[in-house]
Length: 362
Image (cartoon, rainbow, N blue to C red):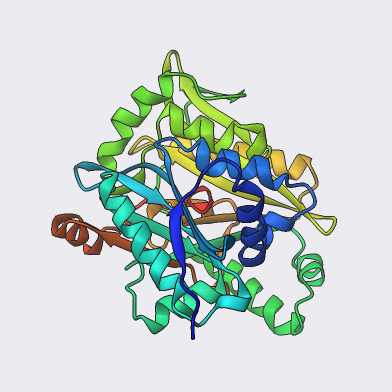
């Protein structure tokens, strides 16, 4: 007979037990360079629009947790209060007893009380993915382009300990040749740019004007305001990012965010976020080119970029040697709207109006 689960909201003092559970379900929380308590404070307690954290207890022991930061999301023409990625874990000794379902249902009611209109989670936990698939939960109706720019494919495969290196290298080389043969119809300006690329330590209020202009180009995108961007990229608790802006006077034409991850002494570069004004292919090229130069100067062999498949950014990136990988793992996005209109918006086939990148996966 299952013991009774008591569910309640987080209170100060629960942090250590919550973090210990998060370490079980999310290996990222166990990395040596991570202070899990600081990460918990940043990710949830200091989130742009608040948080929802619920815990499940049995005999005063926390055995389950459901945590979600809250931010704004633009869907269609509406700005929706949204949960941004759920972190849910149940102690392995208490799984299979329905406790996860109870705390998930409780958390859904909390979301409704707080006015949340959209739930959005990129799911990497294989345990959660299996649960959602058993429930036949719908996943995001778009595929993603996992793009890789690599200077020495043999070295990259050795570092990744790929078993069938020959076949993988042939596949990569074939894709690279194909991409090089694919015609690019974008016109590159022969005139010097009317803007400059600068490095910044944080986003100033000018980024809000940029957001006001660029948001009309998208029907699905995290709200990229000063508050959100500084929380996401410019807080030392979350790591170290390189932020570059394309500026023309007081105007921002676009930005790129870079991250250098050093795992097992093999550094790899990531284009964490990249966004430019519509019809500014030249700005995209300048920002991505500057980012690639940064990684080259650091001696980085492999650079990763993620965007929606068939988005124009995926095509532009091939001009810099990025290749779409057919053998990368799927990205499972669990989402739920509380309004039929928004659900219809996301199902329309408009990849150029959907923005998704690495930074949307916390």
